[in-house]
Length: 119
Image 1 (tube, rainbow, N blue to C red):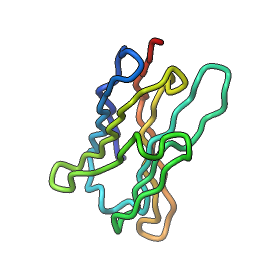
Image 2: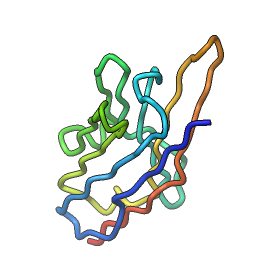
Image 3: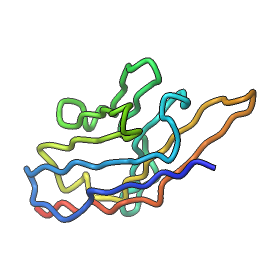
C-alpha cells in the first residue's frame, strides 16, 4: 500500500507564495501520473496540475504561469510551487498518484493540506 503525505499548506496573503510537497512511500516513477487536486469552498474537486512519468506537465488554465509542478525522483517527492496566489486559490489541496502496476490500476490519495489565501 502506497502512502502519500502532503505538507506545506498554510495561510498566506494574496500575491504570496507557498510550496506544497507530496512524499510517497514508494518509487514515484511507478506511477503513470501524479497530480495535485484542490477542493475549494462550494466547488467541486478540480485538477490543478499533473506530471506524467515521462516528465511532461499539464496545468489548469487558472494556474498557468503561476504554479509549477515538479518532482524529485531520488526523494520520491512531488512539489507544487504556487506563486502570485489569489483568494480563489484557497482550498484543500490533495496529492494523487495513479497508474497500472502488475496489470492492475491503482490510485492513491493524500490526506490533504489546507491553503488559505487572504485578500
